[in-house]
Length: 224
Image (cartoon, rainbow, N blue to C red; front, side, top):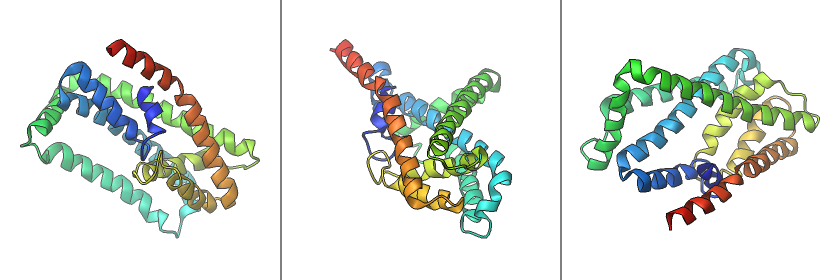
């Protein structure tokens, strides 16, 4: 919850990850494991996004056919798979101590019998959370009188989340709205309405993350 709160205050939508890694390090004293566990959390989240995209793609292909997005979506999935193979197999920068500790964390997943259930549970939880996020966009859209299918939202939101991760603005503001305008425009949604949907979704996320401020205050006081 603390990480979610700081995601709304820091550049991109993953600024809270740095906060989580920092306080995990304070708890464990192991920078490699702290960084790796936060990375794995984000990585599983991205896997769930790619999984949802692949499910929705056949149903929403009509919106992006004959556009640059028709090639962008498969390109992102392919780049993610290739990057994963390169990252976990090549272990770039592994000679550095902090990265060596970082990579050693992933050795625990070599025992498939022990790690498979952990990863499966994490993936299932992540898919549920991503679908709840998409349901929030669906509810907001229909609340504004925009009749857009849930499968279409399943196709668009993973792209929007991916773009919003780029640390160009606080919590992805502006970047996310631009992505909403471009993608929802493919489904016939007017720009001003797409921006409204995006901003209302952001407000709902901010409100949902507010308990993180309380947890942060309690956590800081406990540490003193």
